[in-house]
Image: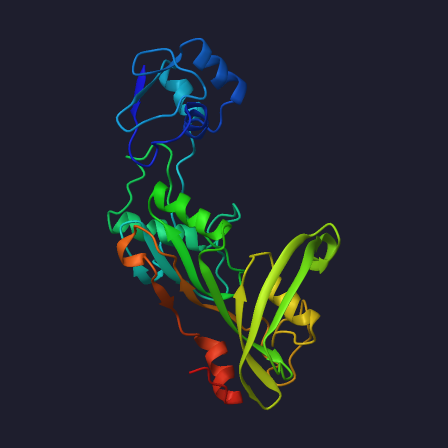
Length: 313
């Protein structure tokens, strides 16, 4: 018998969900049967699948060591990079993602991504110990395209992750981007449409069966045929900013998927899009309650702004 004690990151979870996360390689039907047959108990007593676990509860699993090993998650290889940390608390970490780095891993070996960078940092700082956690793994809450730079929010605790996901779902976490577009966007535009994926071209298009998307686009400066734009995401659909700006005749500079190759910057092979500001809602999270986090654009984005003489301050 192996016993697992419920801590704060697992509390509030249903028993069936907990054991499925504990043993991701086991069939769900086997785990449900094990609960019914008392091969999985709580505090030494028979339990139901829907029972909610509390801090201090002990989940006893009457499997052999070989079976537990076979059904358990495979230890994760952690990359050896640290992220640039912009802000941090006991529950959250805000990081700066460079251009060219993935938000999540794709399963390919040795492919750098922000999740692995975050875990490497948290393990190094002793903020996360995978050997002491049964099911919870710190996670990022918002995703950026590979070639979009800027702010990534990570949750260090299960409670923080639940609340951050709720803020995003309820549109309470405000996300703002900077981008440079072709032409003169003369006034603020609110764009609402429905977006669906065009699989063969891996791009988003408007369609009646698509998901509702809404963005607000504010011109900040115009020089030499280009507009510096602040984009506020009301929804967070894939490629939303890129598709919506192109749909109103102002494709993002460098975005060849939704626009065309830039004559002014022929060496540019990715969109100039940067997640530069996060505004947190009121909460019980102290330093992050109503906090605004800002990250200035760097690299080619900054170089393009200087070349065109665009400013937003």
